[in-house]
Image 1 (cartoon, rainbow, N blue to C red):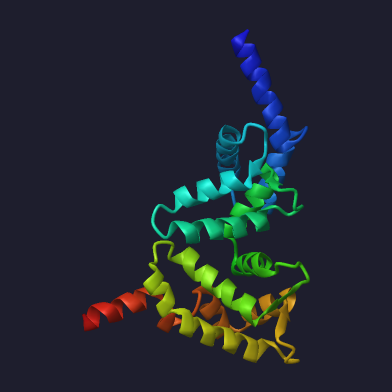
Image 2 (cartoon, rainbow, N blue to C red):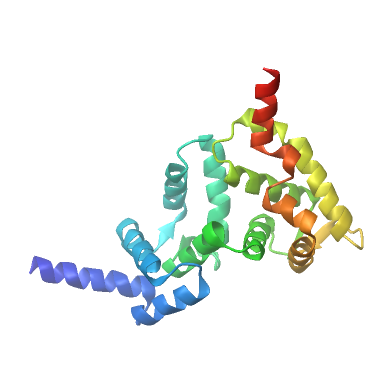
Amino acid sequence: MGALVSKIGFSCRKKKLLGRDPKRTIVKLVRVTNFNESEVKKWMKEFEKDCPDGFLREDEFVAHYSSYFAAGNQRRKEALAKQIFRTFDKDASGCVDFWEFMCGMSALLRGTTVEKLKWAFSMYDLDGNGYICTTELLNVLKLMHELRYPSATEEELEKVQAPLEKVRDRVFGELDRDGDGRLELREFVEGVRKNPALLRMVEEGGDAECTVERFNQNRKRFC
């Protein structure tokens, strides 16, 4: 009887995660994400284990994210996790289902440059109006830099603030053609993607002068 209940329970959770046709849903996820079938199934098992009711809530996501990046400032990691959760929760329900989770992880971990730029853009388009201002763009660049260097100290991040501001100014200087102080998603993504210099700067969260490695190299040189 126990085995039967366990089997039924697993079946019910599986339907919540993948709908009425799990195999078809897995095929669709392989098609729309950058994960293969075995990876999707592995993620599914982990998701089922941590979220038996089929939904991931914000506090759970924050805890998982913070533990994944063992190093780094706890407050900053939690703040980033909350912002990331908002980009996963596409329907603003307060919960992330397995489909939303896989699409978000695909963009975050294995996305193309365009996918990552779209993801970063949506994170700071807080009011959902389809535009980002200069302050929001700076936040995007800082976020990408912090994700690339999750163990960076507060001192290191402060050192790259000014160079990142220069990157922001250059992006707006080249892409904000009408000078209204804001960029829409397509304008930002396509403009950066087609400009090798800006693309390299945005991909790296800045340029060669504002990386944590460069800061550390300079510190070792003069210390």
